[in-house]
Length: 268
Image (cartoon, rainbow, N blue to C red):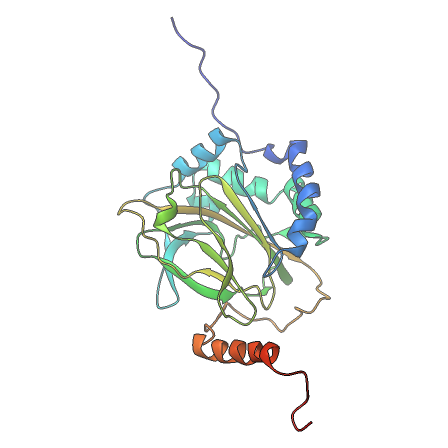
């Protein structure tokens, strides 16, 4: 007895589902008050069958753009013509009206528009021992003449184990250390606002077995104007230096001593 064939998952129309609008509305307050800068993490973000198909669609051997230096070791492709059809459809869906409305509602950033060129974004893969040092993103898209405002990362490696590391870390403004760590679990989405102090990266190298890929879709969004504290001259990616633990401890110890002191002023 033959069974009725199931249709292949489709990306187009994903965000027409009003559940995403509800997710944005209910998550907006927590997003805007998150530390160390506005962000949100959503598990089971896509239909599981679609997420699985997207992960399986990642090409094992294409013309990847290689990055291998002291700051960044991974591969990516922002030319959608080199990607399979399902990944292209998903990238376009993430650049379409319904998802932009989701992001505006969640982040409170109005008048967002996508990057159809996927500069620096698109499909990313990394292997065992690959990493990305903590940095603040480039802030200006010269092709669009626009300010970068938020990032979306969609993790698509099925059965990623927590002990394999590869966390996206969100660091404090003073670079004293990570305030939030996001494990790249399957079908998890990370959304965060970008600015001069949105320090983030994947400094802990992947510890996954050889042959396992950390698969991510990276999307970046822009506005024509920016009027907040993060207005700055255009710059490329700014890699950051961690604060000295010794120097931080000195300041912490000094401030703690104030609570142990007598209430009188010196010399009284």
